[in-house]
Length: 220
Image (cartoon, rainbow, N blue to C red; front, side):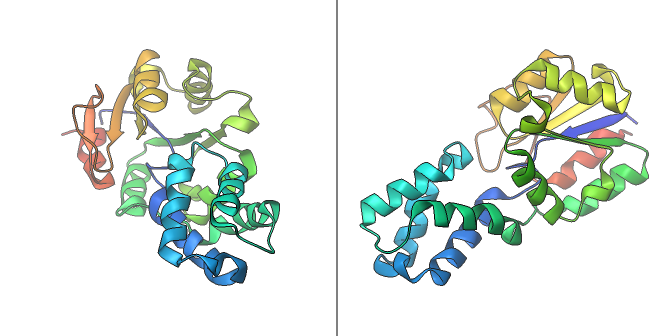
């Protein structure tokens, strides 16, 4: 076995956030009639653009949408509350997620989640994927008081798993927060590129499908 432990990012790595977001936004549009002053796909497309892959929090997204489309009779905070409580119902993982994690777990690999974001929100989304029983540790930035790319959050995760950096692989989709940051503390890093160019970041492994991790982690 090549690695004793594997640490994963959540959004864009295990959670297919783009698909999950579109599913949620379409559902919210259908449940809130004031939103229907604009065509559904126009609303969805603009929401996704303003969201900027999750790096813009939704209070700003909803304010902007209400202003741009002159949406009446609904407040941004009501829509935000609905997002916070309801997004988990639409979360989907990438193909081969459970297969990959199960194989690693059954092979004795220790597994951790290291995610930036709001604690309860990210925890809810993680739990909704039905994979929490396969993890030995879960670190979410708000609850840890640390966030990637701070090396301290990686060190804390490794310590909790009882492994050294050279014995661990980090899997993520963000070139700076996941790949460069984990390599900087001595781990190998696998980039889940999600359609991006393989030349965009220096990683030890580039994958398009989570199943590709299995032979790399377990070795010959």
